[in-house]
Image 1 (cartoon, rainbow, N blue to C red):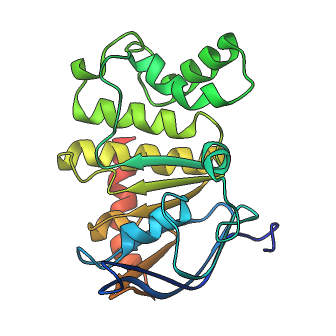
Image 2: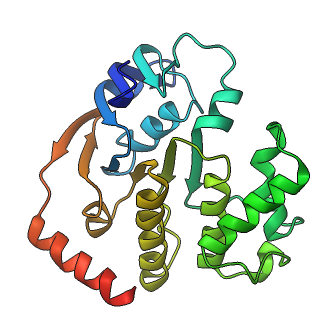
Length: 242
């Protein structure tokens, strides 16, 4: 892998389920440069979430090659350290722990690091401030709105300064107004933190915010040309909200 240019390099990646009857990925080729924002679209069952799980080392491919942040995911056996250091996950359902407060939820990924409790608290508070939740750190997640819980999840995803954020339908469970706020937050943090962002979405207007749009269908991938006229309207809307 050319670490100076590419952070993800995938070649002829294949993954099947149910003894080969379901071909989730059927020869995926993909290269993502450091700092890019990529959106992945496709119908339900097309393989887009499976691809995201492969990049995040949540599942293993059957064939092909996949290199992420300089690590060969097909050859490495213990990938927990890789996930903790390099990958931040944001899912449609935020997966917060209900019996921990907001601050404690954000601190969780740092438990595997060498940071002191003071340093962990400082980093968590810094990110909660960045996502607009500095006044909610002692709250239980059940007391937050859906958008606030998703903002906590974003802060948690960024806390270990990962090189890649993987977002699977991060606005899918939210109303359109709250979803727009979360999307703008992800876009702003992607720019500020210079992190690579790979987002699965079914919303065309969300996909238009990315540098590139990829369509997954029947386990294969192709690139979609962006509609620059649509993008200008979207950017104008977000500027008005800023």
